[in-house]
Length: 400
Ligand code: C5P
Image (cartoon, rainbow, N blue to C red; front, top):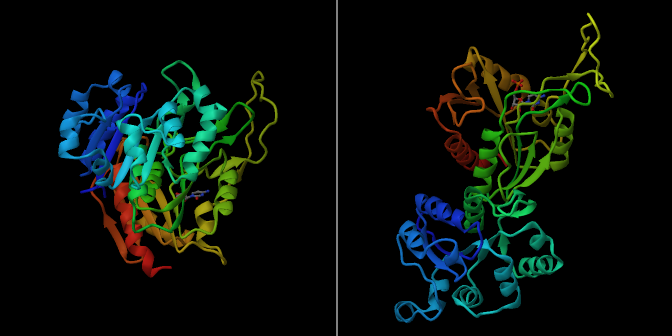
């Protein structure tokens, strides 16, 4: 989707600058042209040589580089891009942007352009939370600057909290969305993902091996096609994608409530591995081991989120897609499941031991639609997601 897109990438001076190298690689893999600009502080963290080697182009480092002024003025540099990306965007550069300073190449480029700008902030948590930075963020948002991240997590300085630069792949999907005149633009999509945890008592719970990888990849791919994604996730191993509305839940009942609150949607993709059963009554204090005694656990059935979305009399999503993880008779079971639940499509996969699919990075799926079953070759979960997102985009116009 980024093929032939021209991205002007400004790398400012933060420890996260090393991730900009990976970002360049990911963008070029997708066919984008990356023109890199390094601030003076940026050169303290990554070298112009490695940046230009990865970008396959000259790196611009100073406003008063007379050769480049002769070849291509700084104004021309920012105007010839489809998007300007600042990654990492330091607190200092954001402050300059908010104030309209133009005292080096990066800030001048940002002022001398009407090209859309996306920034990936990266700074210490206290700097991010400082009222001055928060004021600047509000100004930048008001100026139409788009944001990717920051994430919440451990920082190079040893602290923890918001301020970590978004991961390169999440910045790529934010770039996709920023440039998207994608086929899913204007569509609202619900994606469920991850396992659910059903408490037995305050310390124990029922769970399953779902990592959330496939659901996360689907949410990312749909957002990349321009969809507005509501991502309802159980306690997954992988972090949610950037640029989607995230709702974290624990139990099936919480997941159902979050899904219902997200309606109306054009599409629902139920990739979560929802626990079928919960305790009829979870113990409110920790169950004790007693000599010779075994706990008597009484189960109750959980709501079926996929069936309930599929069978809604009012406000049914135009396209409802379920998943079927099976260990036997994949096609027959998945076809029966499609009918039983009332969804439109089923993405079926064989999760027998030895396939390495559950929790792994690859998937081999059968897509069951109204017209039959289609076997997709084994491929990375990201590719399955991209292919499914494209199918959804293709099918949607005739369903809504
Ligand atoms: O019945 P089974 O769990 O195999 O069906 C799998 C599909 O149904 C998945 O799409 C899953 O997200 C969905 N599901 C659900 N709520 C449940 C159980 C499954 O949405 N309680």
